[in-house]
Image (cartoon, rainbow over the protein chains, first blue to last red):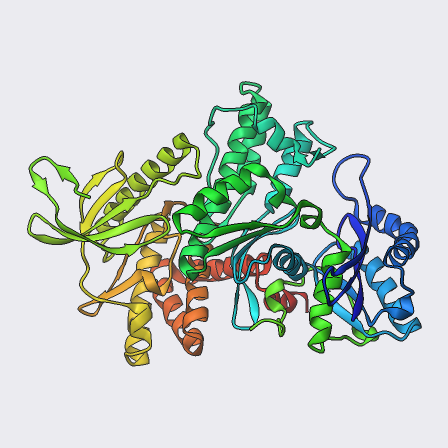
Length: 333
Length: 227
């Protein structure tokens, strides 16, 4: 079985082609939208996707050395994400499905991050920590679905460090040689400042931390390195603390880190220190698949398609706020 | 482990609960059954941050318990606090958790308890205190009185947001562990709450709870708002 998957939820237009035996990745092509300044401008990103899509799909088919006729189904990320961006991927997927008469498989982007993490790390039944620009969630599989144990009450962890980096002039670019600029700056700091640490039950809140960190910066009285150090120390510790609660509560013995922020070495270190208390193991999705990509959509599409999950073309509309705990997962029990 | 303070020695520390944040020991102190709550150091936090969090949370928890007790809300009595060691010694409440009781006692009795809890939370909120982890596991019924326990995440706050989170967490715990009785029990809770804060206070908090749910994880309610 061969599945072609399309990702276009935010800044990456990605096409992956996978099959149901290892090595499972046949193709992985991506086009990344990089804003000239500021954050993602959804409409600009979608225009960029529209101009690149044709080329990306063609390259992916070439890389896999197949024709589109060889695929069994088309998978597409219908959400969650930015409306204009999602619509590009959805439109193309619907067109391919109807023109080549292929089944269309709806994929939830968050579920895809989790599934590719499980596939590539071999973790069996972990507490999953999904940390990205738009998402901060502590997840565990239970009774047919991925359940959210805790999440951010306001902005995502990735958003916190990206906005801070941008506001104080550290970014763009946000990542240099695989290291986030806030991480890089924090490595040079050492002094813990008095910034708020906000955990509410299983949930975290970052907006107060962001405001306080920016206020500290604007006074000019503190070294930026120390602000970065404190911001990182507090934000990461908050996430580790709620993950620890989920681990203690569920009694699971594995932790899986997925999403773009999972690449942070300091974050991984903190998770390892926590896991040691419970004799749990820490798995981290490889950096290339921590960020958005088409392979994860194709792979999740393959799992879903094997269990009969398809969507009629006319019903395949995007869902900007499609939560992962709404999705039934028939391929796990 | 043995904790000593002056001449008083805690007898026979028995570990009864290993939480992610703290260990609870059962013991006797001055001839009384007590709970010893010890906040654990975390190796993954900057040591200064770790000390700050453990000390601050210990002090805050103790202050809040004392304050709520003054207001007449049933909570454990405090016996000793040591912020630097992150230890609180308090009364052991001999009773049954509401979470377990719900599946065994009759529903109208439970309603009475939950309404009482609503009153307690109303009193706390009116005094600018939020619990922070209000679930049916954190309520113990002793001699027909529901005691609220575990103020580990409680804080002083007059923000409607924080109060809304309390109600939201309580509703969520009813939904996840007692789905059959959610509506009845939540209504009883809000009735007790309203008795303290009045109908305007109740309406504004319910509005806030709806907003929190729409922002966060409750997509179905978000859809309702759009219609």
